Length: 83
Image (cartoon, rainbow, N blue to C red; front, top):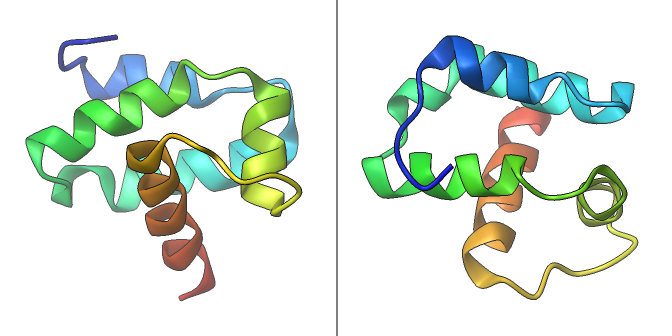
């Protein structure tokens, strides 16, 4: 996913095997994705390519994501959910 993809493809990629991830990703794409910079959209797409167990651990705070760009995007998504 190195290049920008359509929103419909993103929504499909947001459908994960874990409901906990679905409820984070789907609303984020519908409500906030369009406001991201081009660079942040690429980072978000890269985040979606990660494995569900890793994503779950990062979002639930069980582990820290060592990729600083992905960690920043995780923080953006979590802050959006808490609003």
